[in-house]
Image (tube, rainbow, N blue to C red; front, side, top):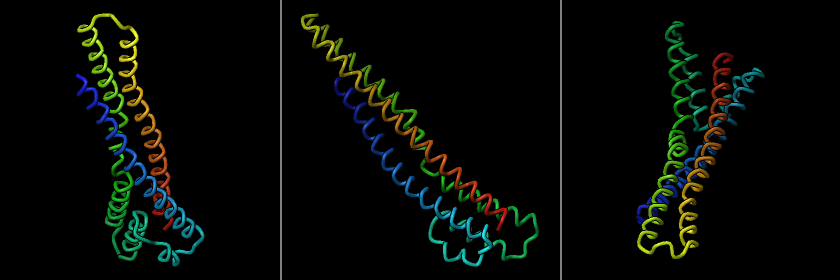
Length: 186
């Protein structure tokens, strides 16, 4: 049982490390794209559409803006124009939301893994009790206390991931709103 308890701790640590890596990458990604969307929208709002090319780099927003400018340069009927713009928008939205499912999964799974670790730890404590009897109540309570660390770790990981997930969703929504305004004004 001790091995199962350690495995549940290991799974939580791996999930936490994975969440940290994804969070850092997504925060950097969303920061770059939010800045770019604000710059491009500001240029469009001030009527400096010709200067947009200098703002565009190799990010999702720039890719979408390039696609919009390419579509606008073609003589398409309104139906085809709308479909192509919507496809570019959906592609950008999909790219913005990629890998967020990992954080969502960790938010759900970490407390469950913590609870599983607690159960295994308490089972270990009861097995030790059944072998040695109630000779040392302090060791029993310390065993249960150690088992509860698994729950605390799982809930802590989930709360941190939930905060980051909501932060990233908010940023993505702001980027998406900027892209919608850009489509309407470009």
